Image (cartoon, rainbow, N blue to C red; front, side, top):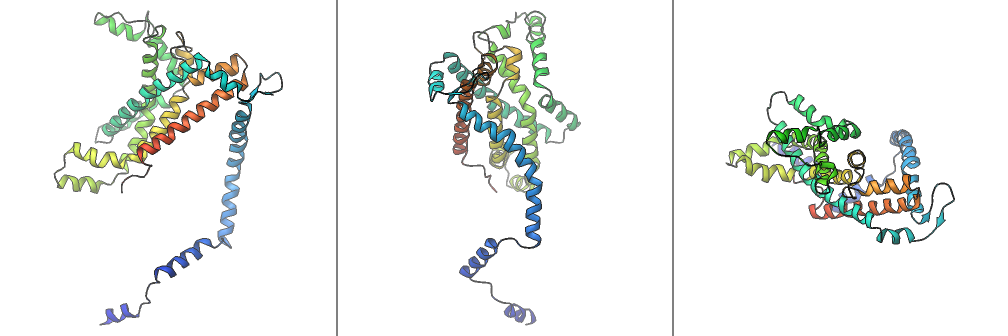
Length: 322
């Protein structure tokens, strides 16, 4: 009776319209007193980063968009030329080739790198001994300078005394001139890109795996689900946000590949490995056609934005299943 009387004495919860009105009133109220002071303090702490981003990111982006419609060689004042730079790009066979090469490079490095990164993360997520050493070894190429990595692979691919051809000679195979062949140069560059990018993908997937609820796997085991079924029915859906993040960042990184191309092949042979970023570099810093380079950069940005939106649409957003 005492408990019943207490329950009866409690005020009834507000009805749906009143509740919405209260919520609306609370959310619409401007912060006062301590809340306003915290808001000001937060804005002051963020202000240096916003100023830095505006000066060194925002202004260059706006300037590159404006210069894309000009003829500018650094030494003379920019001259407005409208869409002439874009019209020239349509007839530029080398730049069209660079777009195709960039798409091919991205098509192979991103999915294969993601699969290998996920497999390595799954292996390191288990009770493997010395996991810290293996994680460090896999992640080390990610934090190593790309130029240093490219120099090491330049020696590995050396047709005379390189490691790869030396290993092939043990089984009686004469290795080709990997980076000097139009047939093998692109696969060689793709292999370097996959190998270097595994570390970051592994780290992201490993962090996502460690945050997955173990109760779901325990319940699935009780229901008799195999490890393979658990992987495809639980792990893969729950890794959807991480997969989308890895996909987008990997695509951006692949489209911006430059260092390894510059060191390994210099865009050759016969433009078989030239990339969009490399052509932008050539236009701006070798030919001093800054306006044309900015137009090329704008095309690169549009392609990246388009691929990002398409991937987001295909994956149905970034929210995982809870």
